[in-house]
Length: 374
Ligand SMILES: Cc1ncc(COP(=O)(O)O)c(C=O)c1O
Image (cartoon, rainbow, N blue to C red):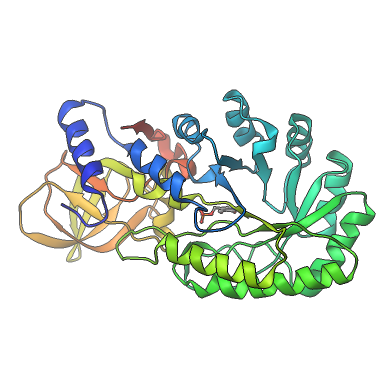
């Protein structure tokens, strides 16, 4: 059995493959793993509310599964709001932590009753004041993302000295400044990113209180890692450290908001593809499958290394693995050691439940793969 999948998931996957004639590519998601991971989130942090980051996998079946007591949602777009509204999920269970939002989304979210929004610029405050007057806002700090396989800090976040000014600017525009947020980077394998971030936030928190603001929300974003090809720190250890630091550095009344995405759905997913071609190009063995960078495996070009499995018992070789499109950007991985499969054989990609289908396009006419809950 491969390393990056649970025995119970593997059994379900094999049963599905044996009994289904569904055409590939498609993503199988183990419901039991999603439910179990969801129930673990935030358990080790006192006074913590959990918001599933819907972008990781917005499949309606998964959102329905996560519509359970103790689970809330983090969104960034009208499309994501529509999914939650269709399930009747109330606005008190929704926040938006994207620091730059479209005016149309802000208007729609506010009309729905969403109250909490992140920001990191005066322009965003002005937009929020215009389209969601009086809303509750939390400022995004830039924090180190070293050791995160999918860093996020370059695009968003400001430094502590401007954060307090911005919170005061929001108060002066009649918004309600309630807290601070950060994101350590997705697939964060460096536990110290959380401690450095919390140090930074506590400086801002004290300066904000000195300036007369009373904050209550500490939003710690997402970033919990999953196993792809290497073991990672476990959630319990991360939360133990966060909880210790929060109780040491923040007032008792602080409420922690956690926004996990990848760690809720990532290791519940097995992407089922088929081998569609093989070629020897200048001594390099190429293997082509029916899913690629444009229809599900986008993260493979940004540092995520998946575990691949084929059923063949032939001798192993090192392959360059590529997707089905005509674009030479569509190369998924190099030096993947696998037994030689036949054309038409299944090739499975493990830990593929997050940021796969949600990134997929129909480029070159290849359809967005289906998600099937098992
Ligand atoms: C604002 C925000 N919150 C939460 C997440 C989820 O992060 P992760 O999937 O690493 O848990 C993201 C990911 O991009 C994000 O941008």
